Image 1: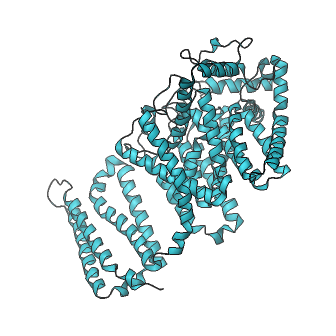
Image 2 (image 1 turned 120 degrees about the vertical axis):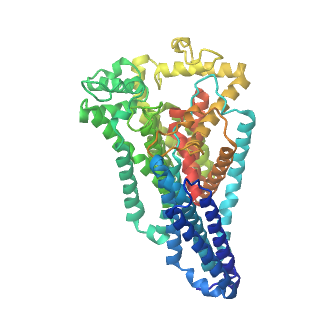
Image 3 (image 1 turned 90 degrees about the vertical axis):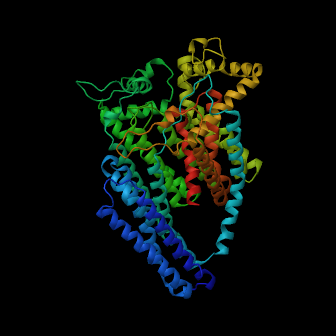
Length: 622
């Protein structure tokens, strides 16, 4: 091991700093209220802290005389042991504080000074020993320089948008159209655990290990899938006491779909009896067919149907894993997959406490999120190969996505603009690819258009009631009043154009508000600093009551999030160039659809809000 004399000279400072931190812990322990003087336990803790304090001073003076004698400590086993001690100390602190606060808080008060010392000093030791062992590797800094240079532009854009929202309140101030609360937020401890596991994967699944296909393409995805299934199915069906299910009551004592979930299930039943959607044009036809297939397999056994849907939707975090692995590293894939698993787990836990959509509810929001994630993988594959076969597959896949959510059509312009750059701005090849893509997409949706023509006499794509809702949004009052729309006389396209021409500033404001609200909702899926009462306490639903205002410390946290998010965009760009922007394009296109429809928040953000924590996970690992 080669260690420079300059690096070794830091040993005395390290030991003296360690001694000072243990002295601070002594004062912290003495400040803990005591009922009857110093107890035996507290005296023992003070003795331990003083022992470490004097040991730090002792080794500091020795290191001043001969610092090189300590360089042998900078070995891999010692560094790993320091890291492990830091993690164990942090885990003990968390469990003592939040596992059962009523029972363990007195122990936390007395042990926390010692444990905080172990946590901080062992982490410092790990970094310091790495510095002693390796020094400052300038060539490694030069390798990452292009990544951070690439990150400057997205960071700048994100901060400009942040200050725009902070000053104008557009995006956080409620619009008179449909406006709700942000979606479910990941819990802080889940957030940290996901990052720790991701960093563990980063250091264990090295480039040599990554060459073993079974590790990154089989074992990790299988572990993530099993984790999602076990955690999600571990939440009992009794949590489904919300507006999408009728009350669980005798004699069946099982949840029956209601509201939107009941409507989709009702349409699937029409297929089972051969009634052809009861002679109507249903929304989300592909999902209705999916439910009909589940009914064929499981009859009217709703617990089995919900379980089967959960097994299928558990592939969502696996899809995000492969997407993260493709654009960055397996570690980034694991991190974003765990974000998705834990966020859905929170959504299941709080199902009875607030409105939410999740893997056990028969609505299309979650399946659309998985469909868009899968479509991102297909689009990247297409833009990498750029041949006829991949173009046909991508066009057909996008057609299927439209049968899940019609508004996904707004993603197409942004995707084609990106494709032009991916085709290296070869316009002729790009046009031919666009035609091939479009032909396959039309072939995929054509049977559905023909079906609708036989019903309504028009080549309509969606349920007229869905069109009526959008029509009603382009007015100053009466939003969501579908009686304003007459399908025989009114045109949604003409309504949007005429109202926008007459009121351009008003339309631009609500469009921007809903667009930004969609993106802000994705950002707020990351945790804020809020009161946390314990692992078994009811979850703090702080996002439900959020009024667009953040405390100063949460403002700083959000800025940090934006910087890390920008680093994630820069890191992905450095590795994959234009292909790295595929998830972002899908996110922006869908947010544009939300802005045009004048809808945003909770379930309306869910199909694409994962893109925010996707790039954030890449930034963390980078």
